[in-house]
Length: 149
Ligand SMILES: Nc1nc2c([nH]c(=O)n2[C@H]2C[C@H](O)[C@@H](COP(=O)(O)OP(=O)(O)OP(=O)(O)O)O2)c(=O)[nH]1
Image (tube, rainbow, N blue to C red; front, side, top):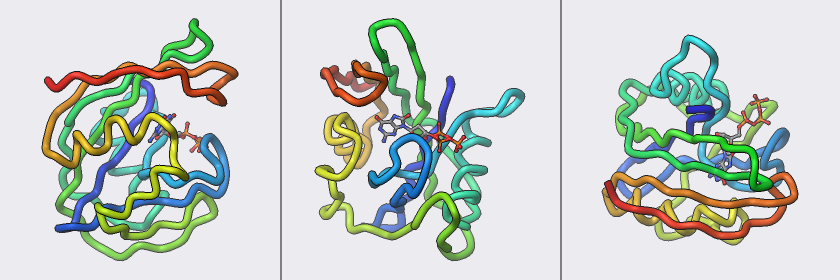
């Protein structure tokens, strides 16, 4: 696994970030980032959550993965982790503006294009494995699919 993403739920709200810099700048996403060497995906999910939003996650559960194929030759695997227990309050950082969004109001038109394919499955409680294709170094979304595991 190369990157992690944290799906943080608090009843009907989901934690999102507006990314101020780095990959996905200007898009809304969920907290996440690169998994460090010697780090487990679950640990990455909790560390990135703290770094990008200030929240302290208590338990992160693996709920699936996405394989991105970029430019037909680079593969990046992103583990998806569900966090329902956490402490603290959200705070803006240099990297991101965190916000709680109603699950019915997720701004899919301002997010990575693949997200509308897989986020609803996760919100419905499924564990998933997806494969998505991008070209132009992440600029163009080609397509892909998910299976429930
Ligand atoms: N929702 C969603 N997230 C994605 C997609 N592609 C993709 O890399 N991500 C996630 C994985 C990571 O959590 C995050 C990129 O994190 P990153 O850490 O590499 O980006 P960065 O440039 O901010 O790097 P860093 O300075 O934090 O290390 O975006 C996508 O298509 N959809």
